[in-house]
Image 1 (cartoon, rainbow, N blue to C red):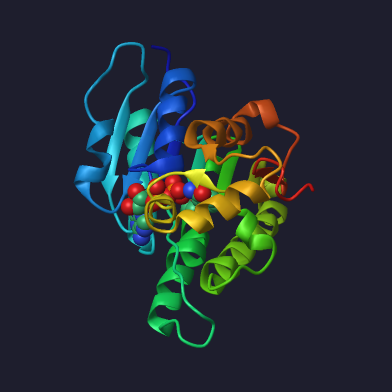
Image 2 (image 1 turned 90 degrees about the vertical axis):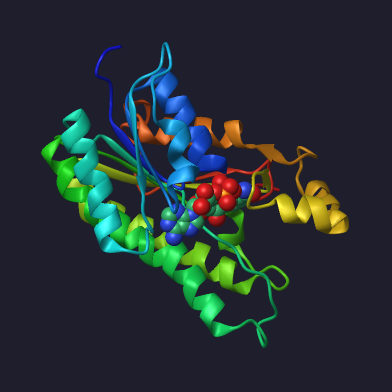
Length: 248
Ligand code: NAD
């Protein structure tokens, strides 16, 4: 296979990060996949015919060293860095008055602070490549309140504006930063809603003009568009991939 554009993706062990990594390996170039535990990124190791090479890293994205190690691995193994996708994320449910603040702090650390660390780690390497693209996963939950979902909604509003601010700071170096804001999509993150809260699952389904939940491959297409030069004049943008939820 030709060398291709090199991507780092966090949260590569599951859901949207994994679907993006699969797509990138098939169509674009090498991937360094990061997730919490080795078994989550094991699927990236080994070669598959017709696919670009990949490398795996077990790291916690709330740790600056983990983010830096991922970028170093991309440059050492594949010679450069072209795109970074920050998909690692967690959610938490609980009333504004009762959710444990330690849980809130963890949501903010993983969903927001890790975004700062990921962008900071990526920028010098993208600059060395002459520019590149960072795609941040926010959510439709970042644009309004939802019952007992305040910690997540707060984190997603923050990461959206963090990305837009970073886009402005990094634009002079040819580094684009964009946001994908998915609506309800079938992944491990949302499986508990499907499995244990059928009324909530159905309520969300009905709230979407397209009348169904999204699939992870559909979101991966949007991430890959923003990660690749196909979107070369787009930065500081938020792309909803939400079955029409925010456009109604
Ligand atoms: P997922 O749970 O399927 O995958 C997330 C991955 O991130 C997991 O493999 C998990 O191990 C990893 N991760 C979590 N904390 C980490 C940490 N500290 N360090 C390293 N890795 C860590 O979730 P998903 O549905 O693929 O979500 C991906 C992103 O998209 C998240 O930011 C999420 O908030 C966002 N999102 C998802 C949906 C949806 O409906 N699935 C909707 C809107 C936004």
